Amino acid sequence: MVILVRAPNASAMTLQGTNSYILVCGNGEGLVIDPGPAIESHARALLDAARANGLTLRTIVLTHGHPDHAAGAQRLVALTGATLHAHPASRVPHDLDLPLEEKLRAGEIELHTIDAPGHTFDHAIFYLPHERALFTGDTILGEGTTVIAPPGGAMRPYQRTLQRLADEFGDARIIYGGHGPVLNDPRATIAEYIAHRQMREQQILDALRDEPLTIPDLVQRIYSRQRQVLWPAMARQILAHLNALESEGRVRSQPLARAMSAQEMAILNPRIEEVVGPEDAAVIVAELGTELRLETLNVYSL
Image (cartoon, rainbow, N blue to C red; front, top):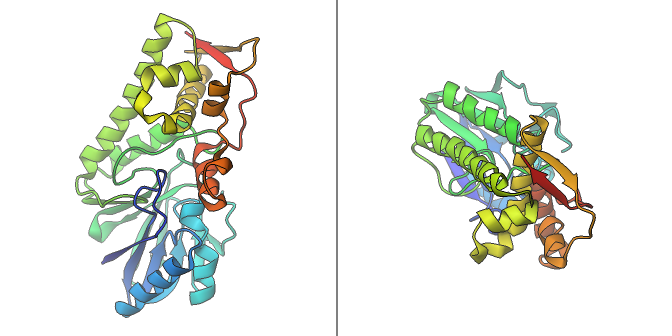
């Protein structure tokens, strides 16, 4: 049995809010996947949901360390005494490393732990065999697509993770993503995610066949002008694709001998903290990788 408890942190980046999951492990034990943000009411909601189902929370696991998924971990540990597990590469303080590519036993269940780099390099996906359920964190969401942004994420590792899911978990019955609704057709969803990344990369290459372009040029050519608030996120996605293509020798770049315009600066180095509060800013900066400032404006060509 899987119990969804959604955090009250809805935003453009987190959709309806972060999804925390309680797994019923037998023997009255419960396991939490992603305790979510550091919001006291959410920690209490997880406790209430566990108690309503006769569970004591013994184990907490993180899909990855972004604050909307992991910042509430220490509070939930303090409230429950549960053991916190995270990826060996995680910077989140935790009790035990996840046993990557092995099974994590909790009560009467065994949770397969999959190393899943791409969205971040400390990302894990969990598979519950008897439910044929994948818990995908931010690798696959309940709606839309996820952000892949350097320096914390990279495109080719992400695409390899998606392909692995298609190859090894094509018979999964359900996907519990880190945000959005539950998905009941994993095979189709994974295929859509793979195709989307291929399509976006082809759009970049097609644009560069016409003329050399900067990332802000590519953003405005490829993405809708009606959603300019999302242009910084789109710019970081394009950067991830370009980094992959340049490392493969398919694209080359050189700096332009001029300063960025105000619009170019806003796209490449948005001042998130001036638009939203500090908690939301922390999530957006982590997702977009905007702690890495792009000091020069590069032009890309084939």
